[in-house]
Length: 219
Image 1 (cartoon, helix red, strand yellow):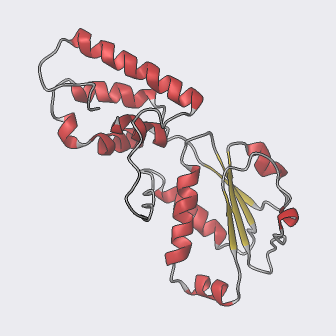
Image 2: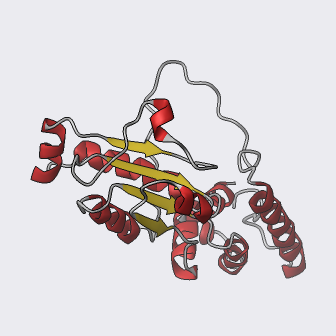
């Protein structure tokens, strides 16, 4: 929101023009999926740094737990996670990987002791024959798990041995606004009386897409 609303008083007309311009930019970003152009690139780090894990998206905690519970189901060998671009599938996959790394439950410990594995595949664009890349077919008996994300539900249906699927939907209005507020920051939202109403307009234009809400909120 910095750069779009100043601390000095301005007419509603001038603010409306800027909101309209931001709305058009959001539409282009959502249509083309090019979010990196919103903010300038950060300078390269001086040394090797560990990339911070993207936090769980507001409103998707229950969905992550649902995915986790399905993976603990012995009847689920392959799980498909589908949804439109930038809705949060990759973030869920990263959180799932983190959860497997940190989970101390007895069931996960037994998986590791028996050298069972979980394979995480991000953004499949078509059906994949896992045997061709050296991955044995998962079965209910061996305890191995395969999780993949895709934008197309057709890929989920066509992929072999998929026992369960979860759709990642856009955030509902309340959760979308909550995420946008946290990204923009309370100080910015309170810096001018016109900003909260205008921020809601901009947030609404993001159509519940978490990445769009974060990128625009940080602009």
